[in-house]
Length: 548
Image (tube, rainbow, N blue to C red; front, side, top):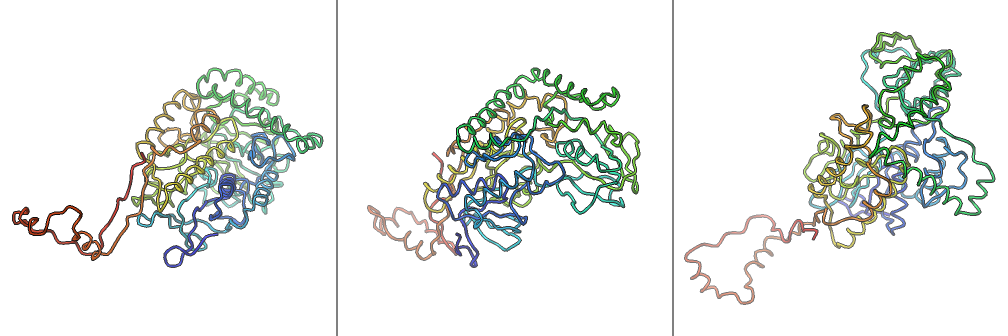
């Protein structure tokens, strides 16, 4: 695997995959299935797992059914619960790494610090914590939920107690008997609150915007069910297919007819009313936007936890910190021993973009400063032979991201096949016109969706209010759109071949068949002198050829 073909003896590989979560491990499996073994998976941490390694907070679990939240090529008949917890999902990813022989490709503690496109050699120069290497193709699978987002709160640096983000949980800090503030009411917070409420002295939840919460019908999967799925694989496939089909049928309500979501809102309100008897508290917990505009959360324990006598709700965001006192935007003051931020991630401004320098010497972050956009969620103009898994507008509001990842793996596989068929040293560069056309199409479809019309501000939207996160269609549609690479959407870039000046001059001086004799050429020139060759090297061949 790999070789010393790079400059100055640097290792060179065919493909470098960044990250070892679902996207990175999935890419590694697909590369091996395509017969490509000359690749590495560069992981910054000391183990695989991605977001399911990093998020280990109490109560951490998936809100997508287990049999749908797994690779189609690596089914697991032994999921312990219908909605599995973080330990089971992380164990599954470790199992995938072992089963498909990926360990020898994975380099742990190998954070990527910078990637630069070499326009002369048509390859990526990659600087990592363990040294440098080069790659023909880079597949970035760092994921949008990899970098925690902490708000800038005046006075936070002077807080004398414990502070951490939900994705960087401090397991050495005992919350028992402590006064704890939970900042945020997203997917992590609604799992953390019921998990720690019984142990803390007092829990104060700072809620800027209430979420819509539906019951999570989680249960243990029986021994008999697991036995059946092992012995009769078609039953496992049927279960997965049913879960997928139900969610596909729901998509139109989110993307075309948001008014149909009124019934779901009524069910969510009924779910709240069962646990929250205080009408004043119920009013503060009731969202003012259409359900689905922000991510619909699943929990059967969240509302009962908020009804506990040692749990307080502050229906306002955190404004500042004064010593150990937290001050909300509405003036409420709360003294606490620890602050837990459940404030999400850098989704529309992914930090990896600062570390990718393209063909024109610009970073991807600079390219995306006015909003992320890519071709079919995979490639970006100005960044040849670079693609991302879970790129712009590939997120989902109601189904499994593993389905989207597998679609992008299909696209990656065909991308590499097309490069192989071109022969020689070549790269594929997404045409700006194709990127713009794709994104106009996506944004036009986005206009009718609940994410744009539901009356909320969500993490789906970037700083300019543009939805660069969610896919406005079904997973089946996305799979069709990414089944294969359309070469008309790319420019084929080739290496400029160079020869010494003396050879080039001799070639130019040699008469071609049918050329006029020197004396007649001189007579025809009417006294015009021939130009002198420039010093250095002469370029032979073209830098780029059309895709047609």
